[in-house]
Length: 122
Image: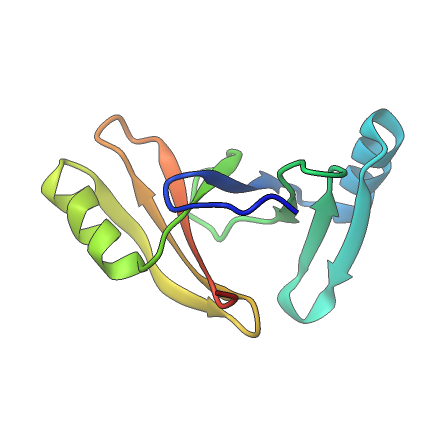
């Protein structure tokens, strides 16, 4: 397993209102493997050895329906502060993913959504 460091891309979320349909598509086209997490209405995908994985999600109303790329951070709060100090915005506050870590959604000055991920494993 490749060790990831702060600032590296680590997870990609793809909007999917029908996760089963998304699984069929990405599984058939790219051979991805899946793990459903029903309690979170979320499906993880695995792109293969040393690939960046991610998940299918159905964004909350008002959130853009776009692919969200996550960047690994050591701590979320100081990164959110730097985002705000440099013209970006916090879109979703730090939220726990039980047993896995925490995430937040921010945007850059152009409005591009970026996910921040702090792993519980370290």
